[in-house]
Amino acid sequence: MTTTNNKEELLIIKEQDVVPLRNRVKDYGVKLGMSILNQTKLITATSELVRNLLKYGGGGKVIIESVSNGRDNGVRVTFIDKGPGIKDIALAMQDGYSTGKSLGLGLPGTKRLVNEFDIQTELGSGTTVTIIKWKNG
Amino acid sequence: MQNNILGSLKEHENKLLATWSQLLIENGSTDGTTEEEESKEFTALLLNALQHSNGNSDSEEFEKVHDLLIGISSSRGRRGFSPRENAQYLITFKEAASKILSDIEPDAATLYHANLQLSTILDNMTILTFESYMRGREDVISRQIDEISEISTPVIRVWDGVVALPIIGTLDSSRTQVVMENLLQQIVDTGSSIAILDISGVPAVDSLVAQHLIKTVSATRLMGAECIISGIRPEIAQTVVHLGIDLTGIITKASLASALQTAFDMLQLTVVKRK
Image (tube, rainbow over all chains, first blue to last red):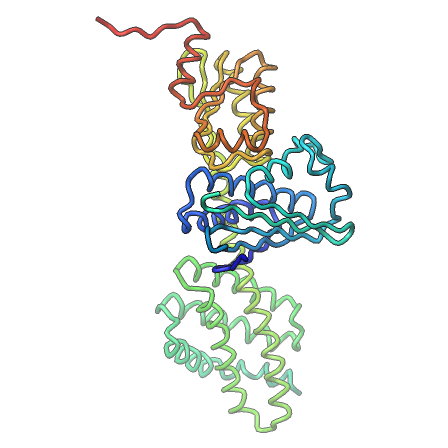
């Protein structure tokens, strides 16, 4: 059972929106008293996913939430785009696979950085990625 | 005719000016003499335009008014007026003109049309002032962006044959381009054989940043120089490992000091304490 304590939504349409988003996400982590390491993991994961959102999804919105599951507090970040979607999720989650000219570590790397990772995609209607980083996770 | 009514405002110019400045004082959006002159000039030009243009707001006379208005609004912006006060300036003019109109025109229908026309013209001008205000602001911002990108990539010559480049902030594609160009140029200019890239000031290293770093290192090597990446903080190191980024082919150090030490070793230099 996860409850949301605080919530905020940001529109991401250009590369300049990345830094403010990362700072907001960091603020959420700092407020929970997250360690520097977990903060860095969270903002790096956010950074990866928001770049995907811009590059492949053509921009979209990001929801930042401060969540609690009773035992631990954490930050949940949801990335929603209305882009073309991902054709083969299993392939996209593989290390080193990229349709762009990048390292191909974004999705699988992000999954290793956070505690919970969920990806929903539909061809032609967009992709939603949700991550949670627990304070003590 | 309605055009004549707006045109006939010209005959009441002084009264209009008086009413307007009265309203401006009531609203508290005035700063004395400079404004009075501006207002006088604006009123004269606008009433002239109204008189001669038959309500066609694209005419030459109106262009003059628009030019003046852009000047006024940027000068007001510099004098510290808020955009709200700037808009209020024209809105109070509309109010004053409407007052005068209702004094001189008894017929309600004609008055209504004249007011409508006046509103359209002045509303357009209000939008214009906002646009020029925004443009002024955007100029400032783009100047600052240029300045920041210029000062943010200094290449420092730390020793004979060793250059260092501290990177502060986020490494995005355009920034990397500037960093790489500066670094490669400095390597040529100073004839250096070792370049140190210090990333202490980079808040997070994601796969894109890592990719940019790898590219910079490869380019440096192509120039015949060795590249050391320093300033890798513990949390960055762990994050890079989790992400699965392979930096094994690159010399990395935790601090600039140890990077410099490595550079000395490579150049076969020793730092000794004087006795």
